[in-house]
Amino acid sequence: MVQKFKEVLGDTDLRQYKTTEATSTLFLPPEYKPLWKPEKSYPYLHAISYLKQRGITAEDILRYRMGYCDNGTYKNRIIIPSYDKNHQLNYFTARLYYEGNLKYKNPPVTKNIICFENMVDWTEPVILCEGMFDAIALRRNAIPLLGKTLPRQLEHAILQHQVKNVIIFLDVDAQKDALQLEQRIKQHGINTKLVLTEQKDASEMGFDTSWDAIEHARTTNFKELIQQRLSLNDYSSSIQ
Image (tube, rainbow, N blue to C red):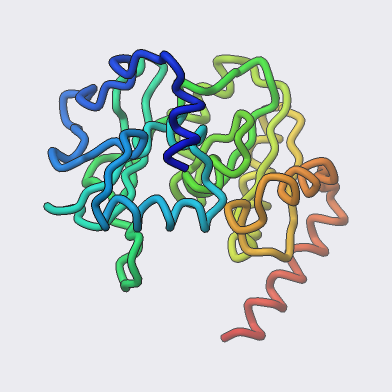
């Protein structure tokens, strides 16, 4: 991947990849190191190895300005920042790249944001997914909800920009939330489709499989909605 960075970067001026952008309440960790600047340290190599196993490419690392921390509060974690439409930092997630119990450690700030807003084209169909790694796997106009509910800011933006098509792609264990979200967005008169998959999430499915599922996404009619709710209730009862 180190050689790939050189191929991707070419004569790119890395000054455009600023790591000090911030809102009045949020900064990247002071220990943050950009992963597109190769090192020979074991933490760096381990972080790169972890991302490769997840299907993350050198292009992804550059596009999303991924970094890592080898000490401090976010030690041994991949840092993925999110920027708003003005290219100001509005969130970041920190994913442990070693085995451990607390996989994610996020900053104590609101999730009522539009994640990866600086990459959104509101004139195209918008894909709502659960986490940042899901959005990175989907690549095209995917917005992480940072959970299973629709942030108010994101809902307002969808309406303000008069988005015509929304695709909901949540994890398999969040299908009830996905159904509720579909109905909420459809109330605004927006063409909304739901991806129902038996696999866990987009980041595990990968780009090709995920987009095949998206191609087969469809709007849920009333009869299907009732059937799916009953099916989900039966599934919930079986695992209790």
